[in-house]
Image (tube, rainbow, N blue to C red):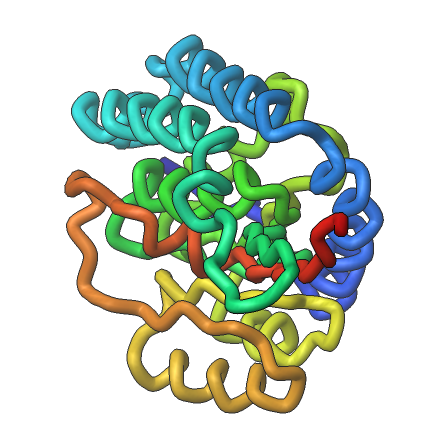
Length: 242
């Protein structure tokens, strides 16, 4: 596929994407978990509707099927993750002590280079289903799949600013994403080892939570690792009535 006309995102594009993500965060994080699950499920339906387009871009049929299943799987976790990661804590005193997971804010994501669609979905879905908004740097080798996925999002009831996809050269834009003070978490799935070290160093100044890149079989059960990486735990103490 000819991708010679794909846009090369600039530092300004990245700043604008972060502004859009931050603006969208209150509304998206404030939506009910059930509603977010419905939206992610709708994304799965729209990927299925555009199956031929993804296949025409060179995405294998089994990867398209797996991406659809992965979106449905994450949609199902939307109203269950709080029950698994939160709960009442035993304390010695006249208090209720309750912990609950909450979204961190704006998530910066580097899409993996070894999976055009499934890897993309597997990094975006856990961030948004838990109430975060996303700035995604598309893999340089798969820009057209990312653009088509952006079109899917635009027709899937995803509010404006919730997912912001930038194409181009992640090695050039990722350092600005990692250092941006209004980005709260980083998923470095698409970073090579050398770039990952650079980005972790840049993220340290703003105390970002960083999910390091590891060799990943994108077809395998993803577990809860990425869901957890975009959540903060809030604990509330409340006195019991006398």
